Length: 294
Ligand SMILES: [Zn+2]
Image 1 (cartoon, protein in one colour):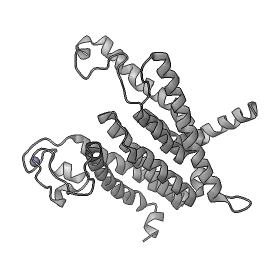
Image 2: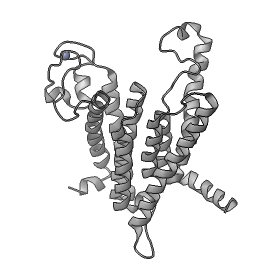
Image 3: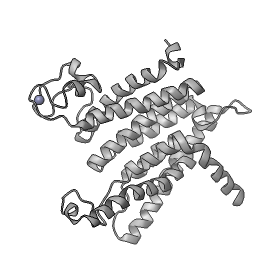
Image 4: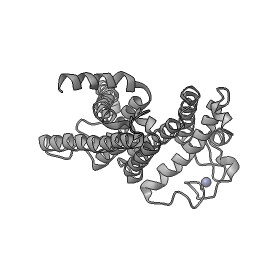
């Protein structure tokens, strides 16, 4: 069975199938957790007429395509969001599984999959509800810490002279949780003082704990500033576009200056960027800083 994971021809497809299924589960979780419903039972049902959905029509990605985006029970429209999330998680997992065929590190495969799934969930839920469920932030921090103890390679620990790889990796993870949350808490507290109103949610502070557990403190600190930058890169064009087209800004969904916007999705995107792409680019900068300020 494990040979399938090592095969370059099969592994990305296997990742896509597993990812699409977990994307489908993510849709359920994103719908139910903010409403405080159980994610296990009852089985899938139509959000419009509550008819239960047969498993054949519930197959990730394909189900939505076969139904052409309309429910069979009552012909109501099924949001393309379901399809997009299943496809997205499928593609991300396909990439993670493909990179596994290069590094062949099971711990990294598990941690990458869990981290990507959690953070895509945060992006979806926070955009929709302005809340980050504790199961994602606190639960994610615990999962990251436990995975770090079992698989030290997550924090780049491959060898320790006394065989204490797990301890060193767990320590990195714990430091990531505490420094990440601590930094964001203080930024939020100072900004709150300066603007005279709450600038950051408690959910963002806990999310940084989850990010730190997987990425360590360097990744957590990067995510704060990378997240702010990503947010600006997304929001400034939207804001300017609305200014140039006054008809859009009359729309209720239009972005107003000073309006509350979720920070979690941008933190999550920056963290994913660090974890999967920029780690090797950014860590030397921290080293340089360390040498500058010993
Ligand atoms: Zn229906």
